[in-house]
Image (cartoon, rainbow, N blue to C red):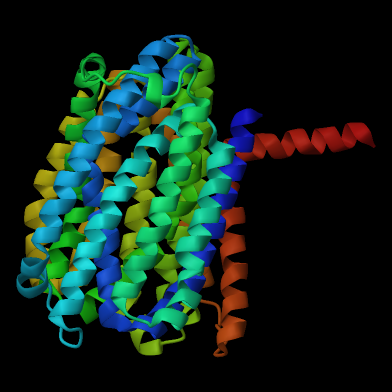
Length: 501
């Protein structure tokens, strides 16, 4: 019940932020223009790359906090580990921020292809991005600790509040201060500083024992988790390379205006992961906890139920985006030309994100067990497939080619590598997992979304939005019918209702 409540809170927060982002992004375009929005898209990409600097230590801290709750790690060891990581993160963030800050001139003049924005504005924007990313890196350390303590309801509310500041209040700020990219990033920096401070306070409230001022700083505690964090770091490097190298490459190949169009489609497709990430964020600490207690039956049940829950959300949203991409973008932005240009990118990336969401589940098992070398190998192999394919597809077909490669690589990972990972960590699971927990949901979502595309669609934007919501609800209902977990819950509800009558 506790897990379900955490999932509901996290999901509600993510849905709220996703809807807020969908509403605000067209407003950003109007306020700062497409070329400046290309800088915003680059900012989102660089944030992901910047997270590599934590070397897997944030996830390691989250895992150690979960182990502490399970009685496998003392409070003293956990406090010492956090203090050691704080010092390390401060140094890494400062060095990386300084390097990007000093290299902003080269990035503005040699990498980014801008036409309307002045080089001074672009350079200053890159410098502000560097400061934002450094502060965010520090905040994520404490966020990892809070997640490890399974304070996910608190995190859900916290994320909603600060997401509202970042996504919503920036609009009146830009209207007051001026709609320039530098003003946008200045506002983001201020909010991130406040967010990091609040996360620090909360993490130390949860941490048992003495406060940070009385806990000695030593690097030695990191040695105990060095093997796990090193594997996590290497896994993160190849994973981010797999998922973000296309976006980074295109930032230098496309003009900033075209990159803004690409970023808009990718941002919309990321809604698939925003909705499903709520479940995975909740499930991973619980899987780690159950594995530490050797509760195999409960772990397996949670794993399969979570797969189905993520599948219903991911495949439903992705299939609606894929089969109705142009309508989705037109309803969202009101720009028919932009919708036509970005539709192929949106559809392919959305389906690729759904495959990514499901393909990540074997990793969750490996993470809970602390056995990540196989995940590292599998992701590295996929990177070797991705890079040459991406170079060829981008050169031949531009952003749409990169989107097709994204879908193909994630499908290959799901179909070819997931069985290898399952066989190593949970032998005998894969066939039933794929047949019962994945394929029925995906098939029903795709068939229903495809059939709906044959229906007549209204020409009025408001009526089209209502029709799109109805279509999404229908696809969700159909895909939920493919979930044995959902069907079992419905039967229990009907039985309970019959008993009450």
